[in-house]
Image (cartoon, rainbow, N blue to C red; front, side):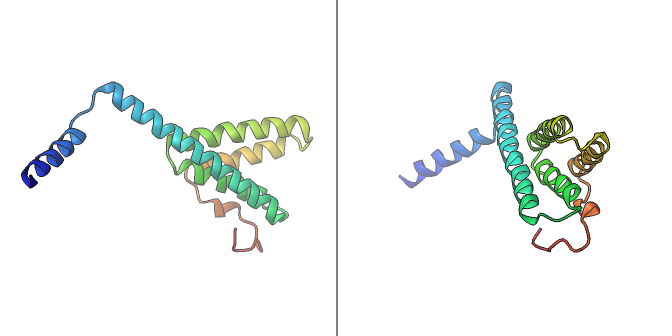
Length: 132
């Protein structure tokens, strides 16, 4: 009986590690992309919540960079989510809030910096509590 259990487990291990058909690989990659995108959206939301909670003057760019950095570290799906969310927010903000093109440009620079793996602390203002 133990021999058959060992053979069955070995067969499963060998089948799992064997080359998968291309369609299966694409499905697995699509699932990973979607999982990373959802996680990236959560990272962006967490950075937004922290920014609102901190309510610290001059910290906007830091939280932009941090949200994008955290999301992009998840992989291509997270980086995609960060870009979509950042672009949508900046597009809305530039039309509605009236902050101006310069503020939008600087926010987008911080977004790109974070997505490319740059240290968000580059934008961290002095005196921002270490909690963030």
